[in-house]
Length: 200
Image (cartoon, rainbow, N blue to C red; front, top):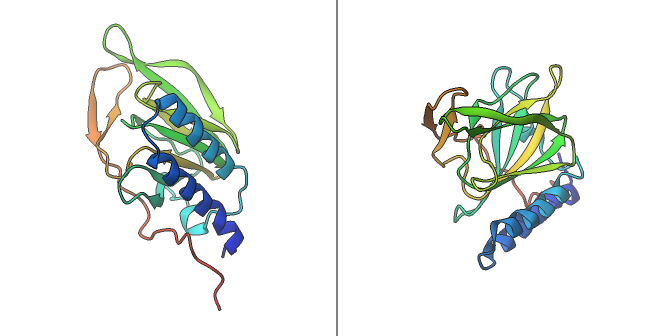
């Protein structure tokens, strides 16, 4: 069980993110910069995530809801990658910030070329613990993410500018102009208790 002090790490991030989305509208670049600072601070330590939200599945990566803003302005989730697991090529349709907590993940970006076909752009990048990356429709929103390891679990913390488990998004097929819509939902059946203190 996590101590109250360890729980405060997540609660502090949620408070700061709530204050951020309550501010008057600002340019997306400024929003991502501030959200990135909050996420960077969150993933600097790896002692606060409950085991319930860090469990891998033998076949599928998991998306556990850590906090969902009641007005759907943002959501915070843990992504848990079993060895060698990978996503399909997909988008988000909202801004997002990814922070690496443990292990590492590899990201490949995609874009539509002049022929209208989806192709990989640039070389894959690897996110290490404590590092962050951003996505949004304006800066690049289509990617594929994989666990960088074939022999251990990796965990990343994702912040999105909406309730990502309820948003209609797209899976893409590289080399084609084909896609299909999906709604991811969440892997968790319980919510994180941000206010849990030590039991009597």
